Length: 345
Ligand code: GDP
Ligand code: MN
Image (cartoon, rainbow, N blue to C red; front, side):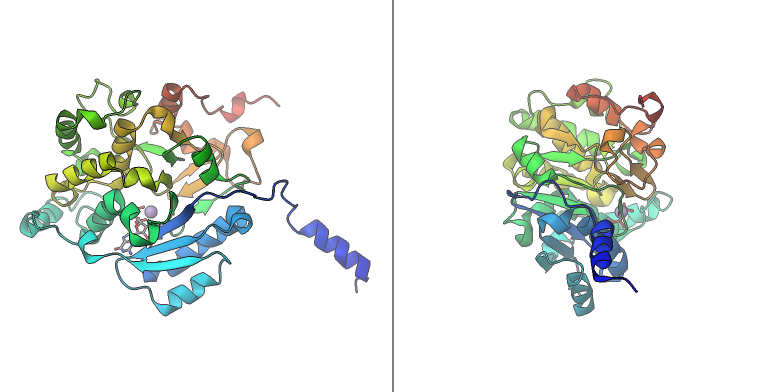
């Protein structure tokens, strides 16, 4: 049996060390998860990590979105994960259905034709991509916020986040942030670049000076090289996503039909929008946020960024050839990720 004093000492030793900074400022920001009722347990696992790694100090709210009504069970279980405010909202029908100009017959033929492509035969995946591409920031539940941090069921946050990424974006005028970049399956976006070129020709006023076109095109805009920020993690300035330029681009793509006649993903759409509509210095790579979504990791390689991480920095996807993160860092004039073997002890 422990004596009273000892118990206290043990408690002190075992609890998390107190953080040096008690947050005094907050951004107008929220987490956002699009999720189905049946993904409750994966969603709980994600939220618990967000809480433990970051949000128990900040108490940023959560917005959960669903194309169907959330069950009472989902809300009840989720509310136990955090003291932060949680909003559970349904997506309006017109943001998760076929617009009038789309032929559902042609859409069905496309799903048949694309059976061998990942999610190629899925109808709901296409509605999901279209919603995330252009409608999410307009959802009523997000209108009060300047920033949202997208989270998904069953992702992993592998390091403590001991700063406020929302405030970082606010203070540094960043509008789009990522942790992993990849090259997209070209079969899913055959016509996306042509559609984009038409937009650029018609709307030169929206194209940013100092944009990073050479990140996503190796021939000065002739073709898309498929480089994209992996949007299952993203921190976005929602005001930018609601802006005239962004909405004009999304609306143009939507009328081109590729969300249904191909399988355009929200990752290439957000990436192309960010690259063309923003100067490169408004796009940010959060190298210090340890993040895993099956099957890729961003694991901080630099030892000074290793804040209680459980990931292996050697497995950092951003060090691989199938990513365009180094190219982004070069273009942005930022330091490349230092390979673990090059780090001095
Ligand atoms: P992947 O990462 O491309 O394999 O796609 P996911 O299955 O992870 O879906 C991306 C995001 O959309 C996740 O947050 C899912 O929970 C969500 N999602 C996908 N399909 C649906 C759907 O039909 N309904 C709802 N409510 N959420 C969905
Ligand atoms: Mn996912």
